Image (cartoon, rainbow, N blue to C red; front, side, top):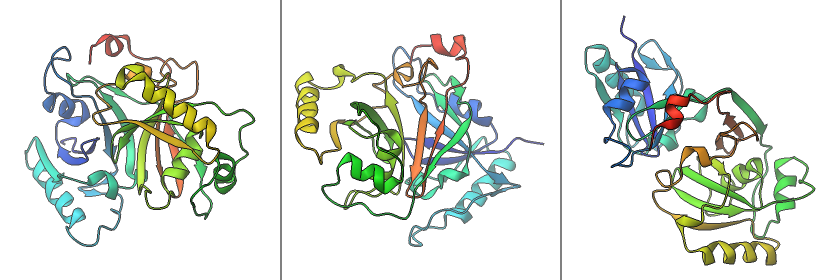
Length: 276
């Protein structure tokens, strides 16, 4: 029997039904050698029950039949197609993060590494964001104690848009704030904390100005440094927790909760050595 998979690619936001498996799909979609092209991505293996998605897509206002298109793509893959697109755009925002069964980091030439255990970090209470919240206000809204000492954190947001920011908020606080921020809230997001500020991504003055702004304005919680193709500019080993010396990983959140996929206990040396 064929091993049919339904795979969400991030940050592109496409869902593909495939008979190639996750690793085969990654190789199939690779742009080439990591020395000459850029093509880092994440792949989420989505829940299936038979030849149907084992989850319900989030409402999109009926502008397309996401479930019907997915069932059709799965049927095409089962009939012999190597790949068949189910949703070609905006799939990330309508696919609940609870549908993810396994998550993989993919390097440019198609090498994959499955992330380790999944943890549910926090369930958000029914609270609302408002302008001029302080970091302590955010902690109270989330229902967690504010950290005794706050440190500047650098976050790489990969979906629904890509950008690099500095923040006074912890990952749990930032996830709540990003999904409850008045006028700018995300339906859900995927992000990682980085080990350092990645100064090469913008003029250092941008970073220094951002830190001064966060320091001088108590209600300031985040400051964007760079918007663009961030995932291809930041190596996976720069993610917090890659070396397992600190707790980190890949965070996914919606307005109700936040989860994290930790790095595996041992990073495969063959994957670690590959450029890209």
